[in-house]
Length: 219
View 1 (spheres, rainbow, N blue to C red):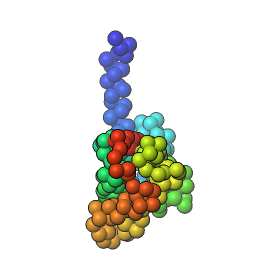
View 2 (view 1 turned 90 degrees about the vertical axis):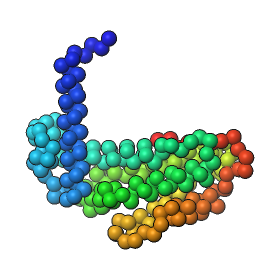
View 3 (view 1 turned 180 degrees about the vertical axis):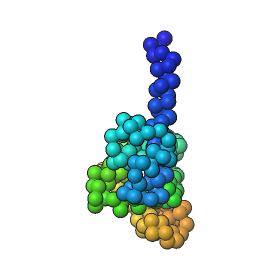
View 4 (view 1 turned 60 degrees about the horizontal axis):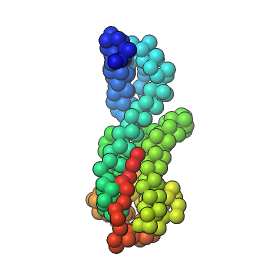
């Protein structure tokens, strides 16, 4: 039986909802106007509540932006790495992962956040590092873990999973993502992903013709 009293549970739930409201309001404003142009007062006005409660949750605007980045990075990683069945061949698994990755990375909201981080990086390098650690670096680690299992199972030749994961992500992003950031025509995403995975497999070794299955990509 829980020792938490009903009114304590209500307060905790209300606190989580209030924190969520601040993060959601900050996300909308940061993506629309950029980090520097958004004030704490504007976030409080959009979310409701008070400046005192916002500061009690986050301390300052930089920490609030960090919460925005962390939340979006968590969702990104979960979406990219979920649904890669263990029985699928690496070729199929990597193509599916690549398509989810590119689809999410080139969404308008993802591109807006990327542009905000790039714009603020010279002035706020700690926020740029937080973005990198929460998003790209975590995605690389998850992909490297998957590739490591394929190497250990003898399905692929991946002696350096971390480097290979970085290479694959580079192939997937490349000029395709830069065109999206610059609001230029990117061409067909599936064709791009298929080409990137084909090039990667040619360099790292294709899956064995017969294998006992493979482990899925995990976050």
